[in-house]
Length: 287
Image (cartoon, rainbow, N blue to C red; front, side, top):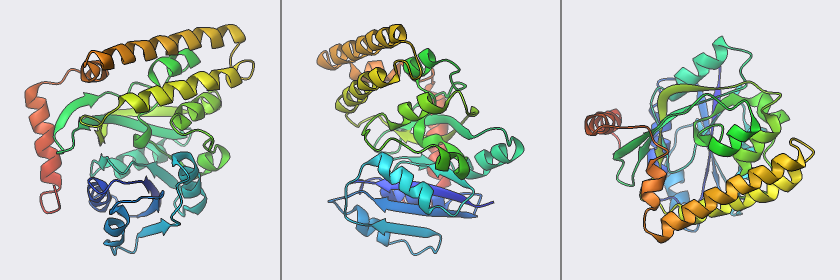
């Protein structure tokens, strides 16, 4: 069964090669990689063009359409039965495609499967472990803790064709997708970390505030469609409280402390083992 890996990218010359190399290093080899340039102004396109593997498809229309639009394009262009999400600043575990594909093949009732992830910094050092809990069954849990680590998701192309991303959204397209689909879909998370998720060392504050602001606007649309007006008000207070806490932490220089609380407890020995494992997987590559 063929897997399409969808990788939109924008100004990521520092990390794009790592992402592509991690796809080339997969133990499962029946894949295609669709790279879509979303209007990069740095050297990212040159890096993407340097790969000649016939399984890699590069689309470069010079436009900046945003992530949601690009993800919908990948679904339309994909020739794979399954679609795996990935961001250009992340790295796949070499067994990711194999393990998620086996899971979906053995459980035809499951539409999407995600995984836990190691958190890495700009030097590819593992700094934490983000444990993926089983997907929420209630909307309040989606608001509180999300549904998936978005770039860890693999799902059936047929599901993505029926459920497209909202292209009007810039930062909360995944949140909106889970809210609209969770009652009619079957989701699951694999507890094993199958992705190295780059977060530490990248300014998160502005992105976080934009995401939460979009969520607040979405709640007005969700009222009566998915939730009651009373629930919409409650969720609005919940999100506003999270924004206030994050803003205060940012003002006090404690943003990294707040972000780290989302991670599972992680010893120095575990960090070293995970870092060594990552670098050993790519010892003949670029890490």
